[in-house]
Amino acid sequence: MLRFVSSLSTVSRETGGQLGGALVGVPASGAVPPWPVQRVFAPLLGSTSPVVHETWLVDGPLTSGRGEDIHWRRNGGLLYGVIDLDEVDFRGGPDCSPLQAASAEAYRRIFRLLDAQGVPHLWRAWNYLPRINLETHGLERYRQFNIGRQDAFVDCHRSSTGNVPAACAIGLVGGTLSIAFLAGEVPAVPIENPRQISAYNYPADYGPRSPTFSRATLARIGGQELLFISGTASIVGHQTVHSGDAAGQCRESLANIAAVVTEASRQAQRAFVLPELSYRVYIRNAGDFPAVRAVMEATVGAAEIVYLQADICRADLLLEIEAYASHLQEN
Image 1 (cartoon, rainbow, N blue to C red):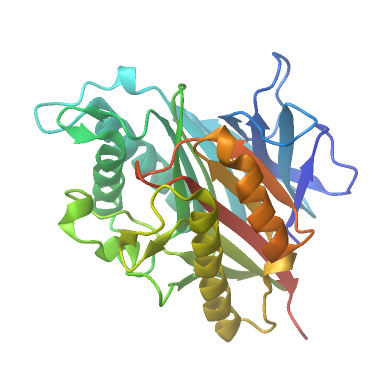
Image 2: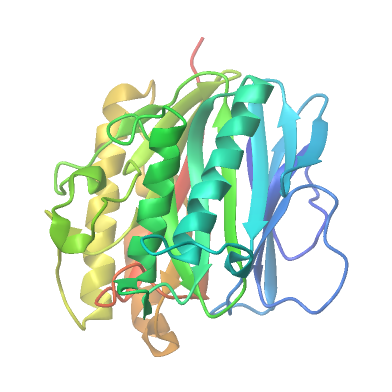
């Protein structure tokens, strides 16, 4: 069984082995847990602690490994890994920026690992890159990342439309390109949002290559149904709405999540509901936090929520919300 735990302590009080996790916030220098951990250096908002430890716990034996800059752990048909690459180590070329080259190489390495381990199906990816909205080499850095990511999907004979993982792509002030990922032996079911054009079908207005992700994925393993909802923003069709209005964008983002949950529930044994989800909310401007928190609490009640300050993939987006939930399957 896969369990998600969010804690202010490095050690979860729940039993089980640590498959992997994330260290979210601005931690003081110190030891990092021995399991694969993605370090998301972004200020937490509304927290009494500077850091939150998010951990995926599993039952049963674990196998660990390191190679090609990936630290990974596996439990049966489930694998979690983290790769960090510094784009300064990649030259790029006339038609390829260092970030594009690093992004393509990171995903090629991920796919090589998954094939070698016999867990070929990528369910969820968490992508972080510095200065996501900055234009360099004649193109916004998020768009450079999208080109590199899609190049790797094509090079490794993965579909770049339809059956693609849930994902987010978030901007941090500094650091390296960091990608955490969760994969399985069996494919997840991609979920789309009827209120939005699928991201992989976006028009060329948003860059030379469309983003390679599904709005959500529904995975089944070990008697569980796992719902991974991608980073979700105030977009209807393919256009940003409620420009300059953080509360309005939060309401629209939650309406999109509700639509995705409805679609996922059609294919799940049991319906999912918004208050049972665990949320991570990225807010561009810290001053918008009170307004965003008020909308979140009014909509999802006492759900588990982590807020942090970070940049969003479009310059006119003020926030992005991702979420996760799990159910036991009925016998």
